[in-house]
Length: 313
Ligand SMILES: NC(=O)c1ccc[n+]([C@@H]2O[C@H](COP(=O)([O-])OP(=O)(O)OC[C@H]3O[C@@H](n4cnc5c(N)ncnc54)[C@H](O)[C@@H]3O)[C@@H](O)[C@H]2O)c1
Image (tube, rainbow, N blue to C red; front, side, top):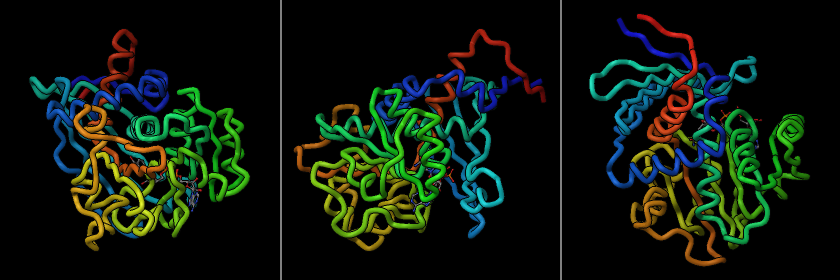
C-alpha cells in the first residue's frame, strides 16, 4: 500500500519560514548549477484564454518531485485563486510516494524567496528602498520575505485596497503611487503580466528588478527596449527564453543566450553578478521545479516528528 503524509497550506507555512525558504532556494540554485539536481523542462498544457496547467518534475537530494499546478488569471474575479495544485514527493531510491503538499503554498514560499534572494545578490550593497508591485498571493509572499530579511518594503497593487490591506497585515507600507514603487532601489513585480510596468526610460541606473509575473507566453512586465538597458539574469535559460519575460526579446533576436546569466552560476561563484553601482540588473524568474523540491524537502525535514494526515492508496 502507498502511504504518504499530507501537508495542507497551513502545514507547509508552519513548517518553512521565509528565512528558511531563502536558504533552501539558494542551495537548490547552486545544486542545479553544479549539475547535482536535475530538472526536465516544464510542460505547459494550455487552455487559453482560461488558463494553463503546468507539470514540473525535478530530482535531487534523494527525492523526485512532480508539481501539477495551474495559472488561471481570470479566477480572482470568480472568487477563486489564480494558482492551485499539488506537489508529489517520492523516494528516488525506490519510487515510493512519500508526501503530498499544497502546491500554492510551496510556490508562494519559493517565489518570494527567489525574488528576494535575487534582489539581495544582484542589488546594490547600499540599496535603501524596496517595493513589491502586485501583491496577490505570490507578491504578498515576496513582501513577507523582504520583511523577514529585515528590509522595509512598500507595496503597490492595481487594487489599492489590497495593497493597503496586505501592508497593514504584514507591517509594510502602501506606496503613494506606482511611480514611487517603480523607483525603489529593489523592485519585485508579481503582476499577471498583462500590463507593461517598465516602459521606455523608467529603469533607473543602479536599480535591481526581479520580474516574477511574466512566467508564461505572451506576458511582460517590461518592454524589450528596457530589457536591453540592463544586465540580464534568469533562473533557467531554457524556461526563460521560451515562456518568460525574455521570450519576446529572444524571439525578435535582440537578446541571446550570451546576454543572460543564470543566477545559480552567480550563487555558485562561477559567473559575475553586478559589476558596478550604476548597472541595472534584471532577474527574469519563470519558477523552477528545483525550487519547489527545496521547499518540499525543507517542509518534510521540519515535520519529521509531527503527526500528519496520511494518504493511503
Ligand atoms: N516566477 C514565478 O516563479 C511565479 C510563481 C508564481 C506565480 N507567478 C506569476 O505571477 C503572477 C501573479 O500570480 P499570483 O498567484 O500572485 O496572482 P494573484 O491573482 O494572486 O495576484 C496578482 C495581483 O496583481 C495585481 N495586478 C494586476 N495587474 C496589475 C498591474 N498592472 N499593476 C499592479 N498590480 C496589478 C492584482 O490586483 C493582484 O493583486 C502570475 O502571472 C503568475 O503566473 C510567477
